[in-house]
Length: 95
Image (cartoon, rainbow, N blue to C red; front, side, top):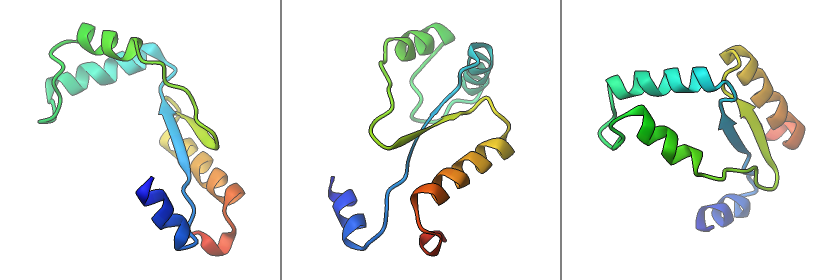
């Protein structure tokens, strides 16, 4: 909340995105790849742990949040992101 107030006080705008992968096979393949070379903060040891963890989460869009499906090609995702930003921010405010 602190950062949001600071951003708005400077007449900037927060644009929020929810990124998800709707292709379960692609999602699992990405997780398997991540398990082979885990980041230091990654505590999952196998796919079942990851699947169980994320499967019990109830992630939903919040107000004014834009949904991005990460199984799309990067070029499509970038185009969607830019179109959304342009639709909610005046051109002069876009860097």
